[in-house]
Image (cartoon, rainbow, N blue to C red; front, side, top):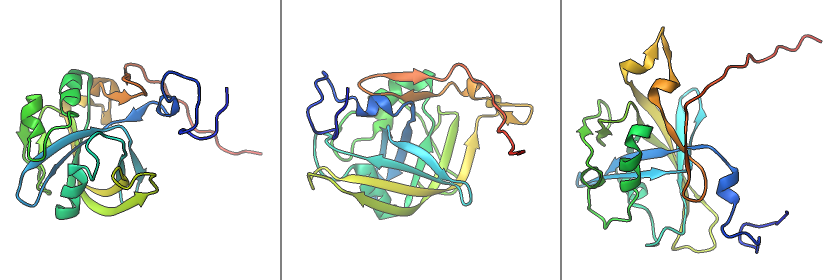
Length: 207
């Protein structure tokens, strides 16, 4: 089949676009507002985009029910800081619970039954139960085109200024992804789990 825009008729029961860009790391982002109120939410558009300095990005995109800017973006605009918390198989129910469209001011740590751990550099807390955290400071916020100004498409870039890794995930000086047991986002209501890895050596040009 072929279609040309995600908003054009495609004949399927649900839009296939985000079922085709898979798997996607989940950005479980914790922030605080100017008054210190905490927000935690998962975002399925997340990735690392640069090595030096290390930079990650996550994107918020509509429609998401309430319209307007997400609390996490508003908080980062106000404070310039956020934390990425890795989502894992063991935390899958908490991740899902934290994505509820709760009213502003509700602490999703409490909603999801999670424990706050103090960060070492930035103000937003870390999810204590998560095995990996990136403490981040804001680099840039980019507004993307949107057909509805009440549902903005916003990308947040942050420099990683602190990394925390559970010692149990480090084997012979390397991070063993299988011990982290991360989950990733597919499309629809589907997720996947990293349970198998394989290696390939990058070839060298010899001709």
